[in-house]
Length: 206
Image: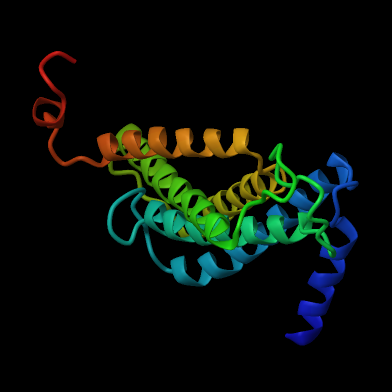
């Protein structure tokens, strides 16, 4: 484990710093996505083996992708912030897209943003699973293709979360929060058990 940790730190040192090109970050994001793809497949296949899964609901492939996607988003976001963290902080230089020198995102800010990424992934995959369930009624998902689908979900989530972390600015943060609200609203609508939810939750003037 210590050897793996040293290799990860070595890679992060190579991509760390404000002068790092976007192409290097893109390549690193692809590597992160590939790692989550492999981990997702290796974890999902033994869990799914011998079972026919539903697309959404309790114990479904959608629920597995949602929980795993949330974990992948948080981990990839943390890796992205480590990649852009400068070895030495200059208080006279503005960071994270702020205009005032010395301003930066604190650890509690980053924790909240990481949670937002995890929540977006969780709600997004739940909503997608619910939509697919309504499109493919009573369709079973077998172990091998289910593991591939989950692995792709993990890879896509990790890739997007890593790129979001390395490009995090106040503008990107506003976009993340807007996506969080929209994805949450649509996921709630799709997952609602009451088809007439809008009668109680929308005002008459809307």
